Image 1: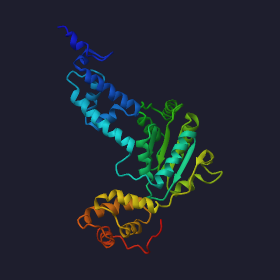
Image 2: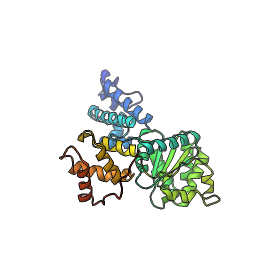
Image 3: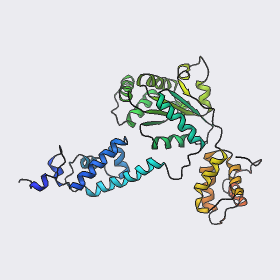
Image 4: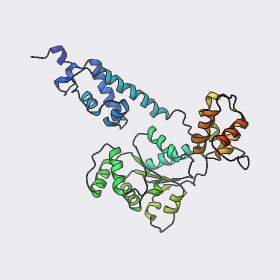
Length: 334
């Protein structure tokens, strides 16, 4: 039985006859989805998970092989991509781009531009990992490896190739050669978060990757990373000699950062008094983690019913809910 001419005309160029059921609007939506994925370096597997559409179904739809109307699923994909697009432009809602974010952004941008090494160290809790994830989400062509303890070269290479949606060959040398081939001539920057946990062999592979693929590599970690790489004529002297930017170790967030984070997260409480901000600052003691993961959630859970917020209320929540000792002295100044 022949296919009616008016349906055959709807098929996407180069697509099978099954695509004839696609309307002109469906074809435009497919093209929009494919264009978005390509421009933002995202895979179909990523979209499948985000849109809750089975990978086989999604692949059939985008390949023009789906035998039923794809309109509902395409609308679902575009809805997801609209939200993701806004998030990529604006970052995570509520995220404050404070002094730590700005410093790390400078190092990451310059390392990408000059294709060398960058090193960022900071005390635990200042927000390094959060900054890494935020930068990765808002800057295409960024690869972020969250290092596991004693990460081996093979695991590292596999992680990077999978992020690039590239086939992972067997054998360490083949993985490395494939990674060099894919990255060479691109504008990628590779971030290794908690790099001090990486095996010495994996660090050496990162150095050779930088040399052979000519891409920027940024090592992020605690002050232990400094002790690992800083010594001249040490085990990692070749990495140290390639470092273009290495700011001093970040010891704490600034008072302005803490105030901005508190105001943003507790916006529903109205204008926060100086006394409340002073108290939050004293308890967090320069730690973004303590402020955002402990103090602010506790205030939201136990303090929002007693507006306006007050310093005594914050102290009571810190003591009774979080079992925090009262700060030894007020942390003053901005």
